[in-house]
Amino acid sequence: MKRYESLDWLRGLMAFAIMIYHLIGWTIFHPESGSLLGNLGIYGVSIFFVLSGLSMAIVYHSYIQNFQTSIVFFIRRLFRLLPLLWVAIAIVSGLSLVFGGGIDLYKTFLNLTLLFGFIAPGEYINTGAWSIGNEVFYYAFTPLLIAIYAKNKQLGNLCVLFTILIGLYFAFGILDPEQKLESQWQTYINPFNNFFLYTCGLALYYNFQELNIRKIAPYLILSSLAILILYPVSGDQINIVAGVNRCLFSIAAVVLTLGFYKLEVDLPDWFSKPFANLGEATYGVYLLHPIVFIFTNKLIASPILCILITSTLTIIAANISYKFYEKPFIKIGKKVTQNMSVE
Image (cartoon, rainbow, N blue to C red; front, side, top):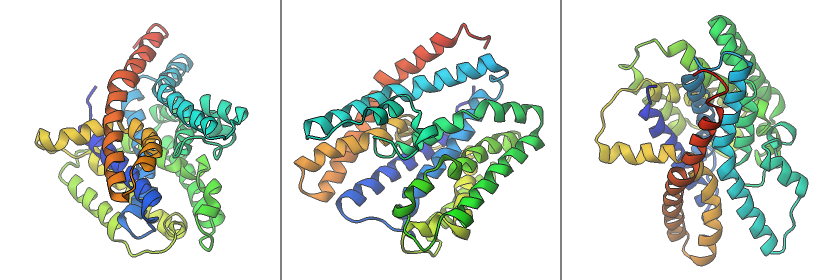
């Protein structure tokens, strides 16, 4: 199977951007809409959803054919997500006990089983884990969507259009542009609000897999980055997730992913490999940087130094985790399911 290293570059860049967004927000000031970090703090996660849909289509488009292979898909995704999530939950819960806090057993159960994404999306334990709950919710629909696309591409596109309409309903009918995003966070992280981003990722594969658009890929990237960086908007981040701006920034997120998907460029290893490695270790960067920050923030007084050390330690820890902890579990997941279907 062809590996799209350019997609790893994009994952790595977005993981790094989200980490810096959080660290600056926790130590110096909260980036608002209109700033690079303020925009990427929100749409970096949106791009992850698009990337996830695209990646699932690339990997599983010819694999998922029936109920049995669908079960294999679910099992392999659980072996990818649960091992590190369980460690992150254990650390945060343990710290809560040490510092006098309690443990909500029901909430812990929902997180350990990843059911919170279906039952209570806002009941996540680890910072940023709401997006993992959203991902698992989308995985539940992935075999069906792949089966529909395999049968009829136009029907698959109609399904994607339906999720877009749901997203528009949230953008124009549910989210209130007069209220801050913080007060509407539970609504924003509703998995149906971001579902269209994931399905658009699937649609990118089925509509562009055979198209040669490598010549315009750099222009797609530049135009979408121009929107994400230069579009004139300011104030609370509700201004980029509601109304017309929601449409514009979401299109930019999808087009940026398409640009990297179709990008064909040879970059020197010293430049590309760090981002590719960061892309592979993205899950660890996403889950571990809030935990690393808990410790560095108590030991380092300087905000700038705290950010530098936290980000460095997080990247190191994420790469170690991926190579020596997560990757072995991925292999176990494949081994456990290899006899369940013919690959």
